[in-house]
Image (cartoon, rainbow, N blue to C red; front, side):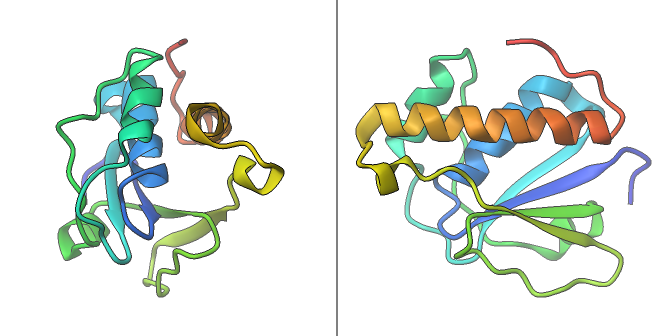
Length: 141
């Protein structure tokens, strides 16, 4: 385990919300936090709208890929953040697990890029608070 804090963002497919959270955290704190993303059942590719919504705020995650949770990830994090109620991670000794029930605009009839921007902004607010909690002064967008 390194001396810097580590966080693992998890969603089911690792194609959207967890990738967005990882990209936002890296953007906000640089390399002061070890950041991983993973899926409980990784999908085949990133969600194109997730990638586009981050590109709108200057964050490029297009080179990322979906992946499962690994022992290496778990060895380097102190907190796991699950995004949404569908992603369930079994308890790991010494690692705190938190769930973020992120905004789901589709429940209000909001779809497409408008939906993704709202999801991005909700995750950005949560990531900013987490970065501050981990002792970082986040960059501004």
